[in-house]
Length: 305
Image 1 (cartoon, rainbow, N blue to C red):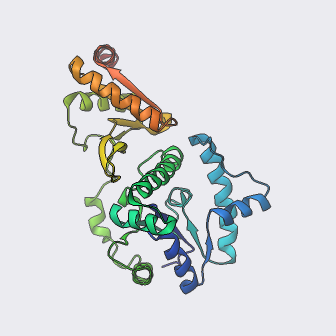
Image 2 (cartoon, rainbow, N blue to C red):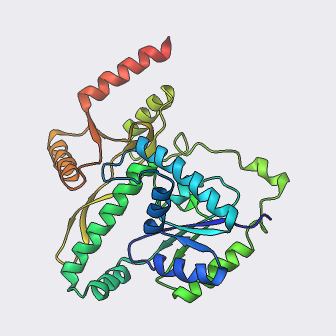
Image 3 (tube, rainbow, N blue to C red):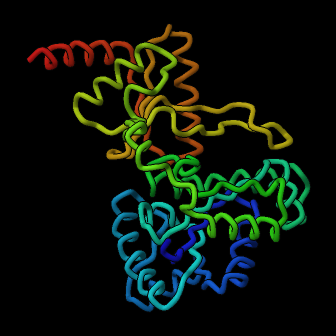
């Protein structure tokens, strides 16, 4: 197996991802490149870093520049790339090992309280805001669910392991990478599945019909990929959340279908408004019953042509 040239580390806020990256870089003798180091490298290469007004197109241009810069670094020696969508920039790269670090909400909150010396209520608001900013960047940049475990080689929960134990597990996983590959004679049993298509289990028949329309027009989609917290109690626990029905990566747009009674529609509209207030950069469109019926009729006509 070819040596791992880059370890990308994606992490939840206060999941000990930064501490693991620092210790792992020392143990493996890898250069650790975090946000500040990356900004310096971009500046030296006369390239711009991302600003607050990020969109998918800006990210793709930025990602191309970042990959070129980091590939030059890898030629000098292996690196750890902390955050910044590394799992997407180096997806399908045979030299990369993608790691996701998570932890329990309770422990992350406790770490915030200790780090900022705040009471539980204040700390919960800090954590929610930090999570929101991270979700905003990754959602708008990646256009997909960054917590999907299938895009990582290893997902590590630091609620159960110390930093030292985590580093030991990661090193063992890297050393054994590729040892237990699927035998060649069995690979045909696992064809490339279209996870945005027929194998999704929909809650309502109208969602399945809408997915068929998207497939007909060859529009990529994800079904309920994100859940947005809308309201928290005094202890910082999420008491109300909203999961839009579809996400269209090519349009950076969430779609919510509503074929319900007027009373339920008003409730859903209130959630959509709240989502827009809390996450102003998230684009979402509600398709109401009348529009949906018109869309179905149009689709039936075009499908028959």
